[in-house]
Each structure stands twice: as C-alpha cells, then as structure tokens.
Length: 140
Image (tube, rainbow, N blue to C red):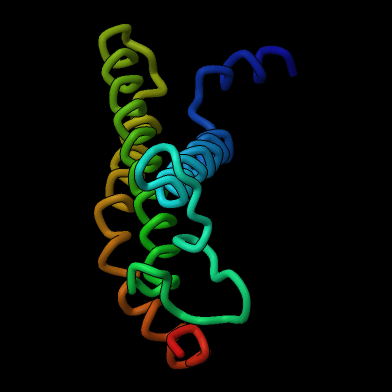
C-alpha cells in the first residue's frame, strides 16, 4: 500500500488544482469587486456594484448590474484558469527535464485550463441571453 502511495505522490490531482483555480478566482473576484466599489481609490460607492434601495437594473453610471457582475466573474475565472494553466506548463517542463514519468498529466491539464480560459468569454454572451430571457426583471 505504501509503495502505491509513493508511486502516485507526484501525479497531478485535478481536484486539487480545480480547488486552487476557484480559490484564486474568488480572491480575484473580491479584488475586482473592490475596484468597482472604489473606482477612484478613496471614496466607497456601493451603488456601482449593488442596487441601493428597491431593485433597479443599472448603476449610477448607467451600466447594467448583470453586465458588471458577469464581467467580474468571467475575468476572475479567466485569469485564474490562465494562471494555473501557466503554472502547470512550468511544472510539466520541470518534470520533462527531470525525467519524471508523470509529465503528460501536467501538460494535459494545462492545455485544458488554458482552453477553458480562452473559451470562457464566448460562452458568456449566450448564458446572459438565457438569463435575461428567463428573468427579464434583471434588465428592467
């Protein structure tokens, strides 16, 4: 049992890296949300991110809240997938140079993460259209 555990100790675990991607995306989302709330650096304007008072679909600058929220989520997810895809490529190159036998897992997951990062923005438009069709109150 111990030898089997040692054999797979260097293998790339997708669940671990997906957790890292989502934690990174959450941290980036918080940062992008903070940049939206404090556009000038010092003055807090929560109305830029959430509607204050009764529901209305646009912030004081005239941008739809749905667009702001989706931009924050897509940008943070795209950055996180691209970042961890780059890290996995570096890990794969390091393993390739050190003759480690668990090279293909790194490169396969890196290509997958970078592919998700590249394809994510094109999927969002259709998802937003579906959300608006199902819940028209989001744009009223």
